[in-house]
View 1 (cartoon, rainbow, N blue to C red):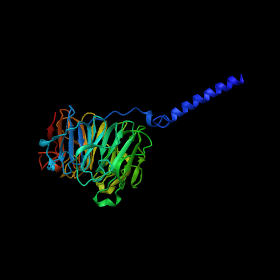
View 2: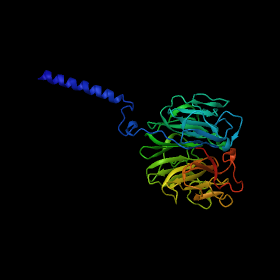
View 3: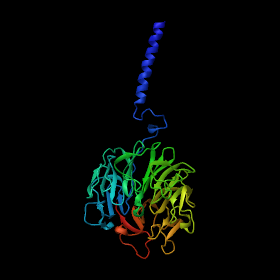
View 4: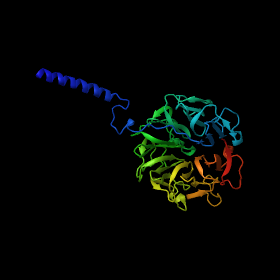
Length: 405
């Protein structure tokens, strides 16, 4: 009996040892069910309107990607033309699901789920370990990044969301503007994984900072924080993600702007925090400079059923019925209001479009919308010929730019 018991115990020990070894060597490192592989794998995102700082690309229903606008750094195509008008739009030779452009570079998620970048490469934007004085005129793959589902570009850098919820960034993350260059962060010349405490489900990276939504509905941000855009209650710059505090509900989408951030909650309400110098937070002070920043999220009044945000120095929201509302910086009409009456729009105001919109896209000082007829309408600054022909006396009025399909 003793011999039989000993043999049974030995067999159990071997079985447990094999099981424990296999469990510890899983791809997720044996972490509990709340970690990396506990959530559904993300599906690749496809977007029709794909903005850069001052250029725009459109992905047709057939999958062709065409671009126009600022081409100073060959961020569209290798061409001596510095600004490409809509009528001379350029079709890209490679197929992309979505693109995102910075000030002088563009990166895209290709059909094979790899990331390709081109244009200005002086600050590590290519993610290949180098910096170059000449522009990169042909798209080149970012080493080590595969299974990408989303791309987001800041002024001189980019971040990618991977199918398992990991986020990688390269280039300059958190770069300040010309008046604040002393706060510029270290350049990441190769993709670095952001140390998020949980897998991400959504990603945004704009001029100075980036944010990700975790699978729990929490939001984490990193980068430049002089005006509280990271939402952690401080004005301390952070290279590693910090959790946004005081959000009243779970978040589904986040949008990083110039120096502010907005998010869509599970209820489809909108919350914003950070810089408010031109009313970007939409909370309605008549003199926004007297309330020029908010360090904690607050609900934007007057908005409901919001499905998309487009955010730069101004903010626009699209609801499920195709209606667009904008607020914030409006000196050039990017918020869609009469610039003579509203140089800064402190509350959401409707933008009058000829038809309901499917998507909206921000540029530095302008906004574009894709109508249900697949016509593209833009308003605001015509810097770099982004809009094409428009009424210079009424820049806030949306004008049809192109129908690609």
